[in-house]
Image (cartoon, rainbow, N blue to C red):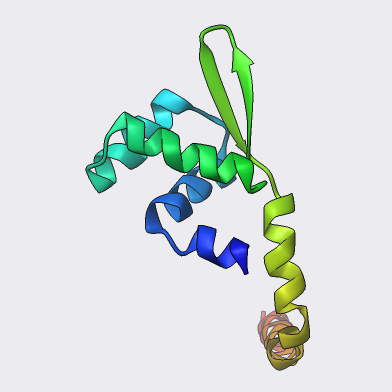
Amino acid sequence: MQAFTILSDPVRRRILEHLRVRDLSSGEVVSSVGEEFGITQSAISQHLKLLRENRFANVRVDGARRIYSLEPSGLQDIDQWLAPFRRFWEPKFEALAKEVERGKTRKRKRS
């Protein structure tokens, strides 16, 4: 699956983690991710291009700056692939939620 190939690179994953929090200019991506991984502005640009071309990021022009944002449609392929596997962990999350609620109820009763 192409989406997993794209996300297999730690630089691209880190870029997406930053874009998940907020939109960033290409210069901000270079400053944070480029410094962390010790790679050049040119290398970051190639990663951003790949993310754009594969629907993981959007870009808009703001004067002389390019502003990148997360594009969730690229993650939909992964979400669809994971769908049949959710049955393995969703009951565990539901059970956990019930235990948390029981704990809150017990705490309220003690107070």
